[in-house]
Length: 400
Ligand code: NAP
Ligand code: MG
Image 1 (cartoon, rainbow, N blue to C red):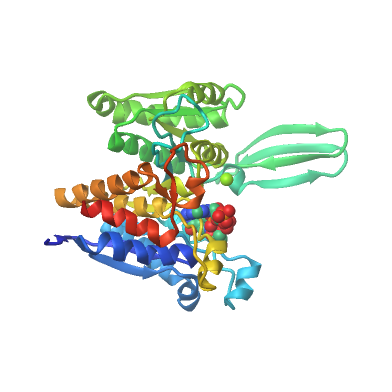
Image 2: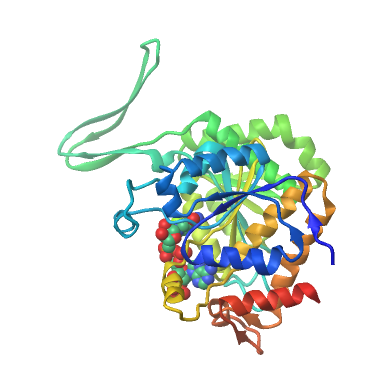
């Protein structure tokens, strides 16, 4: 069998611990036997980030701008304990944060839906994608404790010296205060990423905030989305037969629960943080959540939503068998390969991505799966496999 050739490379960002182990397994077992894999490799493993003073993360993000498509393995975000464990020069920042800041993207998270793993919400038949705004609000806030009685103000001083000032509250006793912001440029990027992604996957886009209460802040999000939609996307959505609508977030929550799924739900930063955990859990397992960072300039970075699965890695190092589910990481690879194919008009790559995903889903639907899914499955003939048996079972299905 001749292998599929790739014209342009995918930016490959290797990572840490158990996901680094399955990363290699996926390439060797499921990709390289079928494709002459062409990647530009960046080692984002913690050791190499430390050795390069984290320059490798920046280089990988810049390479993504050059090649437009990247696939990323889960990486350790160092904390004090990791600084000791790896004898780090510094507590390096989260690579995902660094990459997101450089690509100015929005993160879209979608569960992989398979027969036998039933969502906890009975009506859900199709995946629900959460699009989370990744800048500002409480994640860049300033906070104060009001220590006793006093007046708190919100003030904006323009570069011309003109001041806009309003009373927040006249405290009679102790309390708390918070100031937060967002930027038109960031909200506009968020909106464009959402509209582009909806067109890409041909699904409706829903957006909700609390604009009835937050008449300036949340309302501003609503207005900017609507302006951009009317000016740039209305016709395209009509042609694609998909819909954009805005409603109160309370209303969205109620509609989502009653829906069949199959839509994109755009969320402000905090709402997206909370709702993506809810949607992931309700669909079954974190190991089945895929994630893609989409920049408004059309760069795509695919990854799994879960972390490096540290506990399994230590079992693996001790020579014990592991139950790491590779589905989300496989789908990160298939997503990147499909996007490479679409950008390069290379149908063979697109077909390969479909084949890989179909084989992986079929394996689970036939009853072969790792323990995390095995414990939840409603199938009768479940066969629980370890990390590597599962990869080999998918390989078999690809060859059939
Ligand atoms: P985690 O790696 O997602 O794992 C938490 C637990 O979830 C695991 O112990 C395992 O449960 C289960 N799990 C997650 N993924 C699984 C999979 N593919 N297959 C089977 N079970 C899976 O989260 P964490 O332990 O909080 O974080 C570990 C490291 O990952 C941290 O250093 C963190 O900084 C990093 N992290 C990276 C990213 C990223 O790069 N995008 C995201 C999150 C966290 P059981 O042990 O019960 O089997
Ligand atoms: Mg969260």
